Length: 105
Image (cartoon, rainbow, N blue to C red):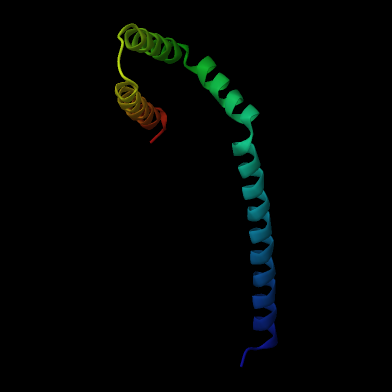
């Protein structure tokens, strides 16, 4: 069987793990609240816009040009939805490429 010292070590290790688990649970709840808040998202967007003004200007110009081109040409609703889907997928691709390059390796 286990010796008294070994049992005490296991109890203390268990207590440390329980404490770590509680701390991680609290941190996760806090992060979840922050992610769900609209103010947090807006703050992050504004920070990114301040850090990368050229990217914001380029993306705004491209979005304006695409919106103008789309609104000038009469199309059916389904064509518009399909076009919107293509634009969103292209924007996500650009965003992922940008995020990949901006992360330090």
